[in-house]
Length: 290
Ligand code: MG
Image (tube, rainbow, N blue to C red):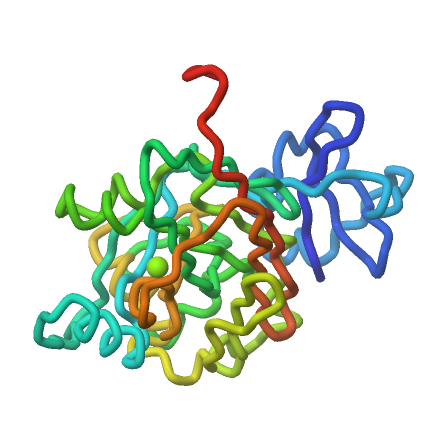
């Protein structure tokens, strides 16, 4: 099954996607997270009786906006750890446990949304294609063997990063959390369609040119290990999102480095999940508040 959040006539609603038809969930579900929080058996048997709408007639938004920061894993592919070490001139220390950090939920954007990034804030906007996990139930201290049964589904995230801010502020949070720096979507694909998340090809294209291309089988920490580690002594909740790290091929490690430019179209393409597509707009915002 595939799950979306969409905007129609200014109202955002969750729905279940079948082919090109969205079956909106009834009003009792204020967001997709309310549906994700149902017991798995109820979810699987759920049938919406709301009139379906054509996907082409509505605007998709990010499938979920979690109640907390988006969890992320840094350096989870060997190739990326190597290229970062090379680009920064630092020795490569492969992590022995996942390196967790987070992105602010205000950074979340949706499918086909133009990402407005200010050239006054950063001059080094970079891409990171990632498989993202959406948690399906309240859980803590999850053993690795049970971890995949806590997953609701998978989506694509572009962990956009202002490299200069990431460097200057030392802690990564600021450089990873600018508005529009966490596009997510286009939808969530349920675990019924992806029983094994370690078999998916993750690609990123800028203006059609492939920049990243690796298989999730080469992750340092598999999804089950990530969930087991993150949930140790810490509660995870329905709708929590974990971005699982990016493969090699980011802009900062290229010779010369490549940064996103005004008008670039960036696509995160993950097997059996979908293609998340966003255009970059580098412009100083008209107003500082919105
Ligand atoms: Mg990342």
